[in-house]
Image (cartoon, rainbow, N blue to C red):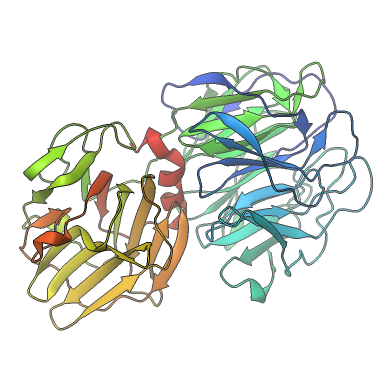
Length: 514
C-alpha cells in the first residue's frame, strides 16, 4: 500500500473501515531504523513487512534502502536495496514477489518512472522487470503517489491517483506485458486501490468505485481533505489511516453508510502500512508538526473472514468441530499452535465420521482444503488427510526426497487416481499455511503456500465421495505413513477460495479466522 501525500498541513488522527471492526487497540512497536516518508510497504511470503524507498531525513533525494520487520522477534533489520524512488507503490503478487512500481527518483522534481522492480524473499535478490509500465504514471510530485493492488485474478493493478491511466499485469504471464484498463474517473484523487474477497477491485478517493470489467461509482468520500492512506485488511474492511480531519469513520458495503470508528493513536501523513500476522502496521511519515518520523504503530487483531465453510476444526484443546467431532487414536496433545492451540500428531492421529456431506468435498462443484502446519523432520510419505476407499477419494500428503519436503494431493474418481505435487520445499519447525483449491476449469486447481501460488493443474473429473472415515494425520492403509507434526485451523470449503481470500488467511496469521 502507498499513501496519497498532500500539502504540509497539520495531520489529524483518523481510522476508517469498510465494515464492522472487532475491538482492537493501537500499540507502539519498535521504530523504523531511520525516519522515512513517501515510502511504501508490503508483506512478503516469509511473514515480514518490507518498507521500500522513500525519503530519509537529512537527504532530499529518494533512497533505495529497504528495511524489513519480523513480527516474531519484533526487530527491524536491513534488506537488500533497490533503485532509489519515492511516491511509488509496493505490492505482493500471487507469485510471492514484492513489486515496486513507478514513482520518482527525485523528491521534488524530475520525470515519473516506468521502472518495475521485484524482490524475491527466498533468494533475497531484486530484479528489474522487463515489463516496464507502458507509459509513466504522471504523479504530481507535490501531492500524490502511485496506487496499486494485487487482484483476485492474480493481476497487479497500478493507477495514477487521478484514476487515469490504469494498467494491469498478469504475474504468471509477464511476457504479455502491461494491459491498459478502463480509467476510474476523470480528475479523481485516489488514496487506495485494493482487491476484495468478492473478487472485485475497489478504489477510494473523493468517490468510491468498484471494478468488474468497468468501474461503478458507489459513494462519495465524506471528507474534503486528502492525505489519507488506505489498506485492505483480511477482515474484508478497508482501513483509512491518517488525514486532515479530526474524526474517524468507517463505511460498510453495500449500505455505503459512514459511521465513526476509533482514531489512530498518533496523527501522521505520508506514511506506509501493511498487514503482518493479523495486525495493521503503520510506519514512518510526517507528524502533525510536519517533522519526519520513524514511529511504528500497529492495530489489531485483524481476523480473516472467508465466508461459508463446510467443516472447521480449530484444535483449541478439544476434539469438537463445526461439522463433526473427532476421535483420537494414540496420544494427541494440544499445545500452543499457530492460532491459540493446535493438534500435535507426533504420537497419534484423529478421525472423523466419513458419512456427513461436510467431509465429502467434490471438485466437480469446487472445493478448498486449507490449514496451518508445522512439520518435524520427515522421511518418505506422510499423510495429512486421507479419505479414500478403494479407488475413490482424496489424500493430502507430504513427500520427502533428497532432503526436500513437498505437499501434494491425490484425487481418485473410482476409475483412476492422479497425484499432484507442488515443487516448493516446506521448511521444518516453521508454521506454513497450505491451501489446496480444486475446480474443474482448465488449470482451475492450485496449491498455495503462505499466500503464494506454487502449483497449478487441471484435476481429474468425477466424484470423490465415499463413506470412509476422514483420517487426520494417518494413512488409510499404511500405518507407518502417519504425519508427525502439528496442524491447526483445518478447514474444508465446498467452493474454490480466490487468491484474495487465501492471502487474507495467511496475512491474518495468528489472529485466525472469524
